[in-house]
Image 1 (spheres, helix red, strand yellow):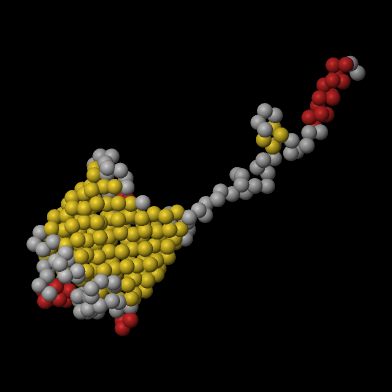
Image 2 (cartoon, rainbow, N blue to C red):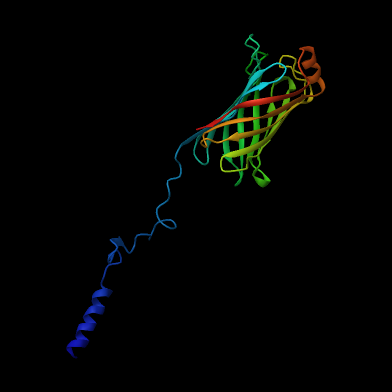
Length: 257
């Protein structure tokens, strides 16, 4: 055998004898880096805890008796398991410290599809009226054309049931100027004079707000809000010298963390 043939055979045998876990030349990586890992490497650590909060409405409503209104929510948890806090209400700003439409909720949230989560927990009507506790079950997420929607059923003692729906949409006119239509309804199966609501459709609360995002987290806005009471709720509102049809100019801040 010639010297050239002997040298070639030696090189082939040397490469054949390289261990399966030897490093890939010039990379510093093992040729077996991904072997045994599922399925494309080590699993990603995706169970981090995140915290997020948004104050959608933090506004004054003016026109024939002014009042202040807030509506916000916050959550903490992972991609799969979260605890939500929701709060809304209004301060009549008439000097007597009366708060109405108070709704405080503590919910557990878990995704059920790509766009929707299911939420369950407790609601408590905490304001200047008679307090009432409710069990809550609902869904929240993105509908067609990326409307933010939610619908929640509530059950309390003595056969009291309620339904709340809410929908809003962010229309970006520019990168900073955003127009947001919003529409909320509240329904009850029984009259509750302590909370000033009757049976059936109690009210709708709609608004059109134009905000300017100085940053994504800080945006002042102006707009118009419309609230209308129906049926027994309208009767109770008249008894308290309230307005059944209420159109107001609004100004406020939208904040999130």
